[in-house]
Length: 423
Image 1 (tube, helix red, strand yellow):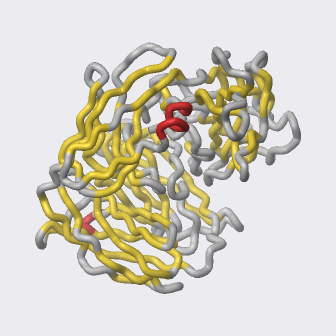
Image 2 (image 1 turned 135 degrees about the vertical axis):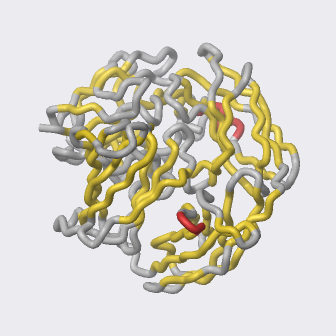
């Protein structure tokens, strides 16, 4: 689901021009180098995982940076989201933040370089283990460690091995999630500055839960959209639990036991979840215990971005030749004002957004305007050459019946507004 109230959505991605690849013509290659953003030194042994751009679920593809910080992987042509992890560094993207995609073209080599920032949290350790069905390793399982008010994720790779980095010291529960299987929870203790080896995480076939319902549309045309189940706090989709609606109805089967957030319309389709519906109904949480759960969604039309932005049919950042881009969008009916937001490579808001206690709209423009120059109010950070950013527009309406005196009525697509500074 496009969470309208999520306030940052970005990761680091630097794409260079394509070159011919000598690999299988139905495959392409992604290579690059992982460096420390402070000083530019190379980072070895960082885990690089690829996720499905359609629903943000794990794939079977992963690799590791070498002693020189370089990596290379060949995988089927398509569009992927990438996650980079390393003990002692902030993950790219941070947990719960949407990644900027990389497009793998058949017969081509794509260069994607990343910069990681050292973590400011000093009391962390990491956990590694194996996911198995019986005695057979299971690849592509979403592994979640939760406790102490936090949730962290990893993916089982070759031979079922997973590693989850930068977990604060303490006591946690470890579980694995994939369609058709339930997981036997494992208790683990994370020790500061140390590796914890967990017992095998055992999956048991026979998950029989079902989540079904309908999707309705407010002030917009009806279309069929994607529906997924994700882990709250990580924004990671459970593998095998995404389906398209059919005539406005959907059914997800073989759902494992657990508590999940349901998400509708992740793909770029000019639809977003109605934020007023979220306010009235709460976050769409489902609790599955081998039963049938009913959940309906209400969607509305998104705020349409004009420039600079990737097209609706692609999620490749567009290049801009200025550090003061002019943002333009299509007017949204019934709004009283717009809220602007720009986030950087690590998911940090560099300008505008909605934050604070109580929530405050940081950069607003009147409903009569549909353009704005970056940092026109001098409250933002300078945009940097070579970096990728995402901008969004939220439609806001004054409402004396709300505690804040206002509410959000729509937003732009989460996977739109991608741009890269190239001067």
